Image 1 (spheres, rainbow, N blue to C red):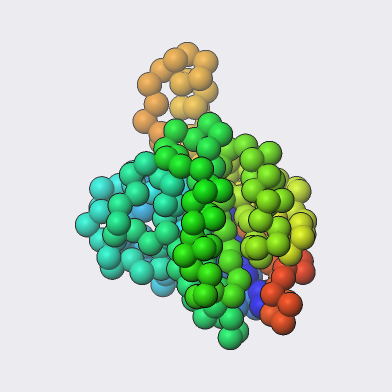
Image 2: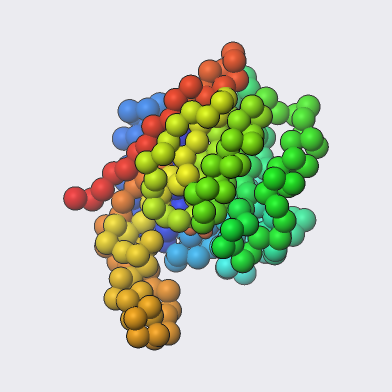
Length: 260
Ligand SMILES: [Fe+2]
Ligand SMILES: [Fe+2]
């Protein structure tokens, strides 16, 4: 089984680059399922029902989220319609209409996809990702075969600790949130790991945002409107191979397609 995962899709620039790369990537890697983090897909913060459908129609099977899950109020009105949207249960605004995991059948295996937040430097986190994960694994223990986790957090060390702790229980711990792809992809125990898959968004930017505005905010203390940078996107993600018989990850490869 092969999983293609895209890191945080940021605004129109991110959606466009995913759209323009996806067919080529599908042809090259032939993934059995495509997962993407969509927490920044609506103008840099959050997601809307319209954009959720757009991403689904693009060819993304499951969308994971993060600290920006609830940044657009539109989500609260449409949660029950978004049956392939996975939200972090340990987000302070998590509501019962959200799905904290999705189980999809891929190549005769029940793949559970989970979205979770880290604690370090993450203001929107309400509970330990470890306790939340343990609870979910126990609750669903008879309903899944393999489990993929999008671990959304700032600190690389926290993500590595999570991977080491669950190395016998999960098949992938893929970091998101920093929007900067790390070069530490590897197999740990039974799982595929990377601290951060990187983003799909404007290449000339500060994590997807307008550079000038970020400089003015940081250096001169000016108010920021969180304007999205308007230039061509970089496409970042990973491809994960899974041995279906052993139910373990066997390889992880980074993808980074730059506009120039
Ligand atoms: Fe993000
Ligand atoms: Fe985030």
